[in-house]
Image (tube, rainbow, N blue to C red):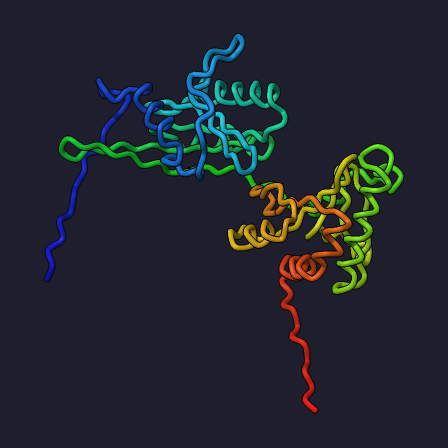
Length: 299
């Protein structure tokens, strides 16, 4: 029987450690942002100066979805001043850079249940993530673990709050958001949808053109008609193979919205005609429908 060497590391209190300081921890996270477990993030800034509000420890960004994380670190036990400071920095950054989605991140060695209850009250209104950090020592080596104890509250899908969406009309989209030409592309896309899924109609809302069937919203696909182009947003799992296929066809794939699980694609009338079958396959996949094989009758 193979002997297994079991390591019993010693837990380390970073707050009391003479060398492993908060500055050291900032450097570790800045060098390898993925260590905190929030994905493949990139460092945008460290010790970022805030107007009349001190310095933000670390600013990270997810380049795929233009989302930024305002990260505050506290060695030892979390406290009220920590959460106030974190939310303040998050608020400053989101107001300065509204083109990004923002999320506040609190990292501390000890996050108490009382503290979780308090910040849990903000979650849903203020996007917050709480991460508990633990440091260990084994000989001369140290290692860190980051455990997410409070995750950002996921927002509902677009159609989940349909009843509180501001209803508009076609004229609003043709004159204020897009143009008659870009809205006509939405009509053409609806035609592809109803060929395989009859009964769907367009529903004009203030921020998007959605879909409805029998009077009930079903936004597995939605549209945003702009002045110069039309964007289709389709709910699909992220797939590198699919992205390569879209790219090879020459369709303009903008990005993937991980927050809502949607691909955002610029579409033209030419795309809808030239790649009709491919786009209809995407529609089927979004609805979980398998394409029926053609029946071949041998004579």
